[in-house]
Image 1 (tube, one colour):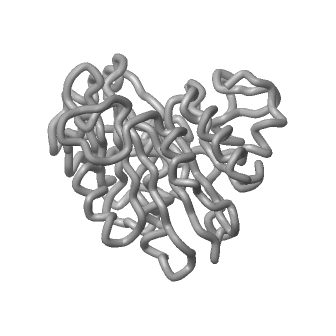
Image 2 (cartoon, rainbow, N blue to C red):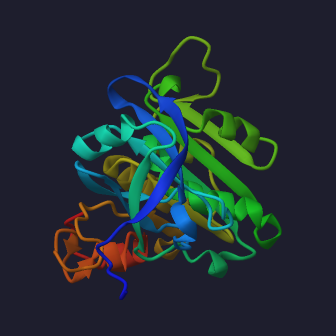
Length: 274
């Protein structure tokens, strides 16, 4: 049968981890394709996840392409489909179609120092490239993570981040002071400036709330980073995933095909609609 881009492939949930509870709940899902079907992906790409009878939603793939046993997605509970995903349990079946979009050009970054800057659930879209860089550590220079959340309870990948400290530089922050917190207090862009990141032979990758990205890019510019050294992702609403419906366009670009990964140099050339 000829392949149909709109038909999802069935996948079994083999792991569900509660990352954050409360009104901004986040869970991490691991899914394995059934019957040997599936696809490979690149760092920064997305996939459309289906909960049968509820709908589908485009989600960043947070697992590394080096991980062949499953795909990982970290999802905040915000609407109908994400709420339905949060209600599922291990062993249930979802649909996955993709992968969609372009990717971080990590092969072009060999020999460079990589700086990952995330806020909240925005760590998920860059987790794939971070894990890939760790898996190919000899290909890159120094690796640094700067990550912040509203409170310490809102930090995702807590155990994984602690384990990262043995492999790379990690700087965490929370927005406001809280008992027992010994790291940076303040917004992520302030932490970026506080750590005085060096632009020499470096690439900075940032993702998080749009207002955070805006001020992180400003902070990096003040530190001497060029537009070509800064990469981010655009998370416009994506409906079809293949550039047909026009829901995600920015001027002539369809984020589901031409994005979601852009250098700041590329993004500055597009209309300010993101």
